[in-house]
Image (cartoon, rainbow, N blue to C red; front, side, top):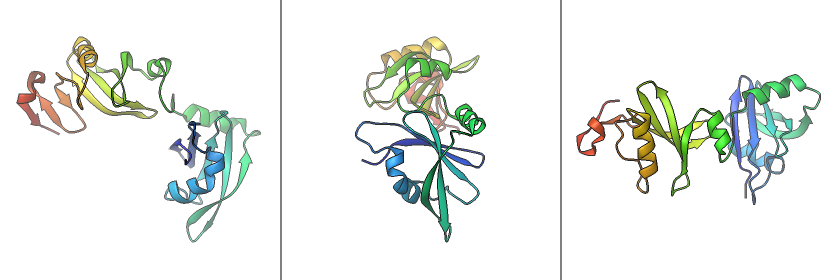
Length: 193
């Protein structure tokens, strides 16, 4: 199976993080395909490609360009560039892959945490003093979805009672779709982007 990884762009760096998933090739062993098929649209002569392997070690992927198309050439160690490695560690998101409770707390999410029937991770997220969300599909760069409630208690109750269906009950705003519900009532749903 192809390598599984996360990536982010920081200034002139495209940064890959190997997810080290069982049954998948490592980024190291799949780098030619990753460059040619996955990231080609991001790679330019002005950007450097770096990656963190499954052991947490940062290295650089040296590329050549022909007619604007990137090709893998060779790996270069970053062992002597501690400043760059420190900068990359600082810019790397708090977690990759499935988050632990500690990851979620560090990222600012509140308990309760739940893994939904479809495998998505959900938690409480404080938006401001009058809005609390049930964040859904939490991943390394945020979440896929959020449902807004007027209080922490309402959000917590909705998350704890959510057993099936695509969304929890009782929310008043779904910012991704622009849907709103007066008093959380699905019969009183309207759109206001």
